Length: 92
View (cartoon, rainbow, N blue to C red):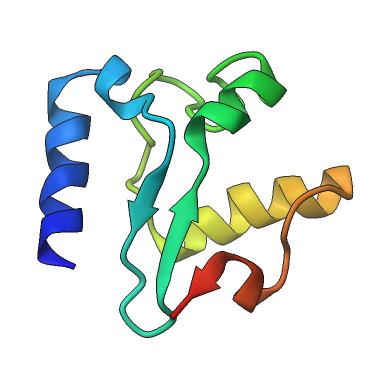
């Protein structure tokens, strides 16, 4: 888990292109890790501003539970596409 956090911070610190990896894993301590297919989302959304509202490569306000549930789950619910249940994203 510690390695995942360090890798995530390094990617954010160095550049937007480092953050554009194929798959990104986030640690959700109580719920299990979340694997995010970043490259797949880039292709489907055709741009960065849907998730990175103001600054590509940076998630405004940090990647928190509240942000993810509002942005990610909200988009999946609205588009009727993608996981919306807890166990769909959080893998133990």
